[in-house]
Structure formats: C-alpha cells, structure tokens
Length: 343
Ligand code: KG4
Ligand code: ZN
Image 1: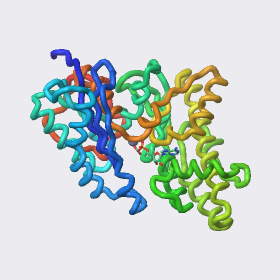
Image 2: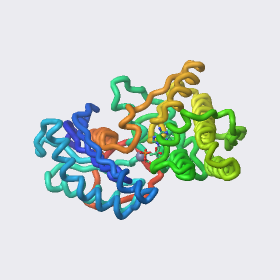
Image 3: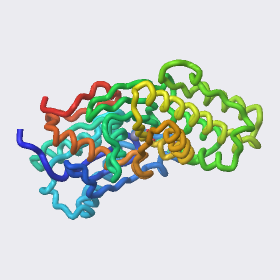
Image 4: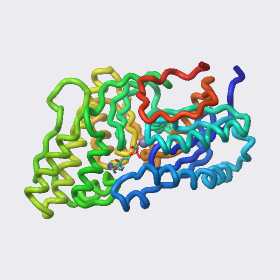
C-alpha cells in the first residue's frame, strides 16, 4: 500500500460538540474549531440527543470551510478524512460518520474510523512536550472513567473502570442537585473554591480495596443525603468535599496503577482533566514518587476535533482504512482496538 502523508481532516460529533480539525500524518496540528451546543442543552439540564444530531448537521459544512481557511489549504490538498465512529450518542455519531465518509468518497481520499476515547488518550500528543510510550492513562470524562496501560498506538490494556457513574457524570449530577447549570463539573469546581472540604465528611468509595476500579454513585448519593439534611447553607462546603473526595480517589488509583505497571509516565485526559485541583494534586504526588504527568491543553480536555484528526492521521499513516460502510458504534470497548494496519 502507498504510504499516506499529508493533512487529515478530523470530524468529532459524538455528543454535544461539533469539532473539526486538520492534523498532518506527522502529528502537526494545522487548524481546529469547535462549536459547543451547551447553551441549547443547558435549557433542558442535559444533552437532548435529537437536538444534538440536528445541530451537528447545521455546523459541519461551515466548520470544514473554517478549518480549511485557517490551515490555508484547498480541499483537494487533504490526504484523508477521520471521524469518530463511537462510543457516543447513536444519532450524533451517525451524522458525523455519514458526512465524513461521504466527504472522503467525494474527494476520492481514504477515510478512517476513530474511537473517541483513543482520541482523548492521545490528545497530550498534540502538545510540544510529548509523553513517550509506554504510559498509564487516566481517562476521566462525562461517559468514562478508566485507567489504561498504553504501550503504543492501539495497544491498550484497561486496568480498571468505574463500576457505575463516570467521574464527570457524578460531577454533573451532584452539580445539578446543588442547582448549578449543565454541565456542572466546572461550575461545581468554581463553587468549591468558596467552601471548606474539611467541614463535611464524604466517603472515598473503593479506596481501601485492592484493584484499580472506581465507583462514584455512592459518593453522589451521600452528597445528596447530606444536602437534604444540611440545606442550602452547606452548598459551597459540600461542593468542596465532593470535589476533594473524587480527586482523592482518582489520584490514589492513578499512583497505584503506575506502581503496578512499573511506569513513571501518567497521562490524564477527558473533560475532568480540566479540573485545576486535580492537576495540582497529580503534579505534586507524581513528583513525590519520581513520576510525571502530562495533560492536553485545557481546550483539548473536553471534546474536540483535534484529537480525532491526530488519532486518525496516525492510523491512516499506519495503513488503516475503513470500508464504504457508514457505521456508528454507540458502545465500542477500547480493548477491541489494535495497532493500525490494513484489514
Ligand atoms: O470529555 P468530555 O468533554 O465529554 C465526554 O466525552 O464525556 O467531558 C465532559 C465532562 C463533563 O462531565 C464535565 O462536567 C466535566 O467533563 N468537566 C469537569 C471540568 N470541566 C469539565 N469536571 C470537573 N472539573 C472541571 N473543571
Ligand atoms: Zn469525550
């Protein structure tokens, strides 16, 4: 097969962000743009799937034009197209997949399906200071909380996962209960700034157990129970306690994963990796054990097209291609991935 080189268009539509970007097969990001639908969904307190799909349809073409202009490229200079095929909302995924697969067909260029969480876990590779393989990745988003041993592109071993709510989901549900707008993670963290985490004691689920799994739904329920008994006056202290409990668990589990794998490199990605206090704690505690942590820049912690363009460009360069089928895979385990290659 002819080696593929050049700029690759990336298309992300798995949830409520339309993300477009162009990244070269040697990992240089040339352009990126995101349209967030948060304002629309905030009216309903959460993502409304049908509205998400319809809004992606409206945004895709203008955003492609925008990133091509930013990169100063004409459409025929694209070497290929990459798009998120899963996991995510079925309708939202199908919108992006149908658009991107057809776009590649029209251009006569190859296309590749990208796993959304692979996009997240490779996102720190968009930064100038790139972590080398192998590393441990803590993936913390609205839909997933996982620790993954990453030995190379497509070589992933899931070390532990949440048995119930994802960390971001627990942030969002607790924030909603405290009357904060959707999505609540950043808002809850801002409220925690005014509180004292030592006033209200909340559990650290599974922390005293062996293994690398997580559980956040009991913590969320404990926070709700305390709110009902203490009332509005405790909101800031409760936000601070909740955030501290989640961070304690994420940090302890990440350090254990590094120890068990004998690795010193930790990558943290996904929406919750934007959390300032989580970053500070991980920086201090990894340094204390001669390890190091890498993150994507803040705008690439949450959903974006740049991470999909990068993952897709690396896979296309490795010889991977999709068939003509337009597929959405709402549930797609990360462990089904393998190194890129034809077939
Ligand atoms: O990766 P992402 O954009 O979407 C998914 O793939 O799920 O992650 C979104 C999640 C939401 O749950 C949001 O509340 C959370 O990331 N989040 C945060 C912060 N910023 C975003 N959680 C805690 N602290 C933050 N600063
Ligand atoms: Zn995501």
